[in-house]
Length: 331
Ligand code: PYC
Image (cartoon, rainbow, N blue to C red; front, side, top):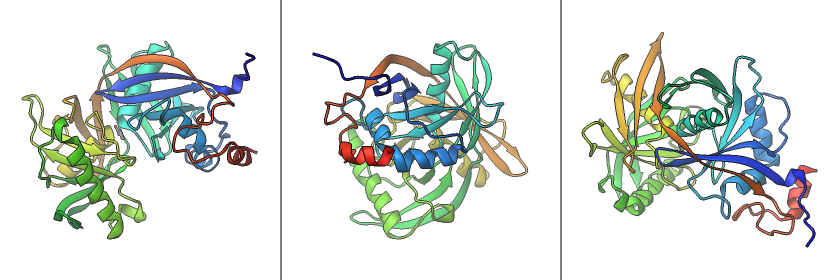
């Protein structure tokens, strides 16, 4: 049978996981997004090439938990690379576990060594240090709490209180939940967190500038002695973060700092629902908090994704795109 695959139908990817949460780095074969700012390139990706996002992370090649990272040429010459992060339903401003996975992937390829690296993202430049022991510390974007003890009326659950904070994504952080934060309760936690998210949207409760709060972080006591807290984070596509969530841990650190419970020099150990742990600390300049998140990632696959023109599901299940629509979008 003759093959109808051309060079453009293949994407070279490397998969890794950071504390259980998968990252798929696209090295080549992704959409051509031009040379604008990372924010402009993200807009082009979203408006014209969303089918690539779906093809890369959705079934049948991916799963709901995978975060994709498209490598882009950075504008800032001091940056090692640019990266646009995306998931099963859309795009992320920043991704902590994904940045750790990206750094470990670049090291696996021999493209970087230990030391400090700058990564340009649509929400700003983040710095990441690769340590001798293979761990990575991400110095995240400036993070802050925008609302404290905000009440939301959640259908079926009543009033729930939480803080609203930015850690590179918007989070509603709440210690209010009826279910122990264990893997056995993932379905109940998912349903509860999803209802909180819906209630926030319905009641017009947003981040700064009306941004949607699309991550829900439930917090509780740790179950391992080396941790300070355990979390369950529900991501925008209704999948839970297997890692302690880099941006979620950043949002938590911003809240702790704002309430005077955490300062420079301290370490916060955040346990995830799968028991992986991130270490967090902060640096503060003129009142602006930058969280530093340390974790480990492991490369677990290197492959080519094949977009076979004969495959009716080549753009992923749920992309909702016919091949005619894709042709119209891409010209
Ligand atoms: O680690 O920041 C993170 C993250 C966001 C969504 C999934 N992981």
